[in-house]
Length: 344
Length: 205
Image 1: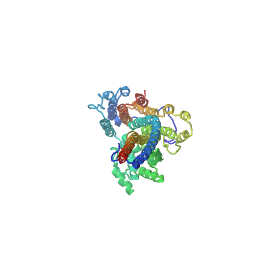
Image 2: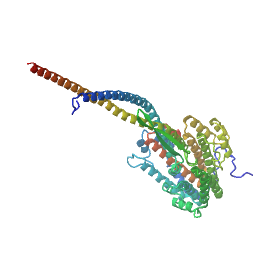
Image 3: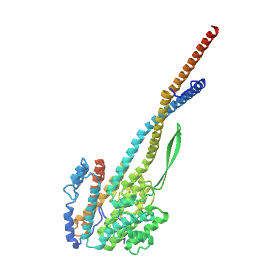
């Protein structure tokens, strides 16, 4: 009998999303209403093709991203986007009935904050600002704990992650080792938590994300002529050995390597675009499209945490897309570049 | 004409030596001016395509960096680039072009420019940073050449001024003074001759 985490692909296009959970009936209904207010693909494409920043912003006038008055710098736009992001996260927390799922969201921010705090602390820089305010631990607490080497006040996942990250850094005094260690621990933690809460959806979601991260890592390592084989995250549907083998292949050999996986089209399109344009825009877009394809399968769920998690992901991505288009428009960048990232 | 000049043969000889020296200086400075002009034209010819290349590279870097920043969460971006691992040192040495000390820049780069993990960062950030890394070489070359051009242009301006001063002020002034002394001495000579002739007539009479 195989374990759940074995790198076996036993699905055709998208992994399973689990059953309904009727406790989430009201929350799911609310999210379904909110989904109708998400920006349509046509709106995003119109924004991308708009003649100017003002014209692109005008298209948002009837939405929650409406900008008041003429905006000639990006500060107010960023502020608005951060406000919308804060709102959607607060909504997620209010809709979630299971604390471990909220903890998963907070953990994401804790890991991001920890990454920044440890990097600053071990290089003797001030802890400073730029942290997410959704984490469960403040940057000052990180500083104090690392200086005293006492992490007992933190949740267990943070204690273990800090120890691994600090240890990894002091092995070679390589700042990147902190990120690699946190990435590895975070992936492990997510899979473990998904098991603990018994969520098939979360397990599938995190494993797909690990696979997509590994695909991007593979191409990025190859583009940088780096042959480090220990940077792939374990726990995905695709075995790590396949990615390691990919490092030894040429670009033309990468797509066939994933022929038997659901990521074939993602890799093929991403690699073709990269070899032609030396850009990861399409690979990132295709990875996102695959992930969203998976998240869209939650539409078959009548009630459950799956649609709420999917909505959070959709909304956060929508905010990023609005930011990308408005940034590009404000700086007079080519619409083709935006469309390459956004998709035609 | 020079002022406070005593019209003596000694002074005339001194001025002749001076005008000869000024002429030699003028010739040398003219040659220096021509050579600096030649060097400047050569550097200026290289500067335009180099500047265009650097501007294109930096524009591309900025464009990709903006795309990366726009598609990443602000906290992830802050964590990714907050503590750089790349160390950059610039050594300045000076070379001499026609006695002008022009800088020659040598870069010393250590470490990896990609100073972050892969999970929370965009591939476009890699591309932007690598493009920036490549742009450094051209940027340093451009900085050195622009500084050289600036120093040479300043030197050319002062050399041209010196040549003009020698050509149009110093040498004509000295030559005029020499002419004045020659005239004055001839006048004295004639005056003396006529005085002697007058004395001789008185003695004979």
